[in-house]
Image (cartoon, rainbow, N blue to C red; front, side, top):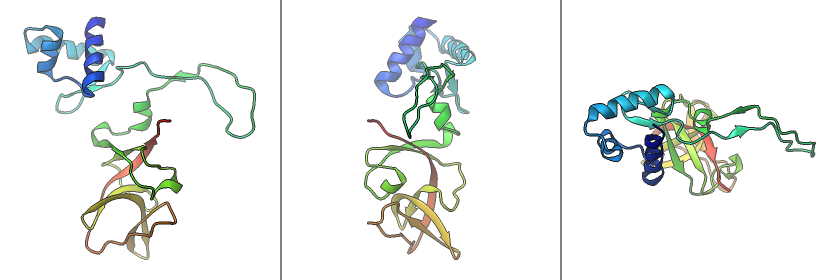
Length: 187
């Protein structure tokens, strides 16, 4: 079983996606899709992978989760104590609804005062209900952007988080595609 898991992990790292049933059949040397179905069932039961409503394979625990060792003071320095308090899956921490969540790479500086910089990745949830003050992914007058959603005096507009940029008021159409739920930055 570990040999099969390692092949799936290797495929995932190289292709940046999970293999299809047919690809698993070839990858693992199986002669029938029925054998693949049985393997997938076992891997789902173990919590190694999961499946969506259509039966597509989703990564779950392909990598070991980082350990939570405690807290760190961001103000004045204090003695550090290393204490294993838990392990965490970053995916489970950041994503509430896998099927409705997507990632976008940020360009531009209109949201820098909200801590969202060029090169960051934002996690956006299509299923979340947008509210005044949320950072949203929106299509406004046939152009896409990310801004704060604002409602003032029954008027809806988009507000940047950078004083160099102006509020954007729809001339024709405004569609909110998703609510930003998280930002990932790699140093």
